[in-house]
Length: 465
Image (cartoon, rainbow, N blue to C red):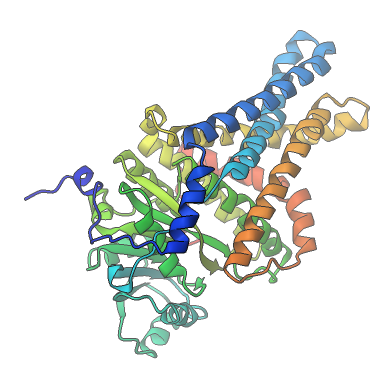
């Protein structure tokens, strides 16, 4: 008998019994008393962000009044791309996070937790794979775990390292030739026997209780939730200036975006680095596609199938990020290409009447904004040096204060979350300076190249980077 995926989305593949202790019940009543509906929060954030963007555009238009008509069109397009839209996004982010109240988790007995399959695709990971497995062994998850490491044609000692340990829950699947991360994960998915599947990078280290928090968030979220993205932070942040800058990007930018999207029911990427999925839904949508942005395309396919994707901000995996500038740029080109691939595969999501559609459209603006930034930055600096400030002035007057506000709010929210899980925010002034002053200079052009790659169909050489 065939099973309709939408029917399954209305119920869990395991019993859910909610047992709220008295203190949690009291907190829940207080939470509800001060609760604003999600749609009202969305409208408030949208109105304030639009007001700031309209003000920015009106002032910039006034400054551009002396330009000739032929140049005004170009100037308007540049100002919208580098000042108006970024100002709108920063204010929307700040207001949204200020209004965000993470939904309370329900309390579950140990017997309520489902068994999970953890898929780890490994390609030349001899230096990190044993530590990743050790972090899984330290989780003390209350239900059965099966861990499947798919050795995807490694040419180093990865397979030997895997055979040197004897965890009872570990199974190694050896693929003779490398076929890419998506192929490896799909090979593991075909053998997965648990109702939930978690993906984890082979160089990631799980914080204690990460699995329990991730599954508890899934069990506490609305019934149509079929995937939950975990929080990914940088593990090798002291390796180079490039990793120091990325530490702030993951801590501030990426985490904040996912948290905001989750607030408005629109989480757009469940990263393969650390995410949870319902196994049956993974099979219904066909698993991971063989492309540069396999996790993005997969998540959009899940949204296309009328499901919800959540986010768990305190289920943390520390992952290694590219340490050299060349490998960092290649990774971000791949991410940008993945966005284009997602639009090609699931572009009809733009026409859905859901809050998540707003963020689909938001992503549609990134190629334009990154291109405008890449084109306008040098002219803005040169014009400012000659006393012409209409372009640089718009960026400083409207983007800078909105960006400062957004980053202060994000830092406060993230620092509070860190304290709740026993972590501290490490001092990283050089990374912060690089993140504020240099990051966009190299990231935006790399993203533009990735967008072009996706549009023109250029195939990346290596899906593992």
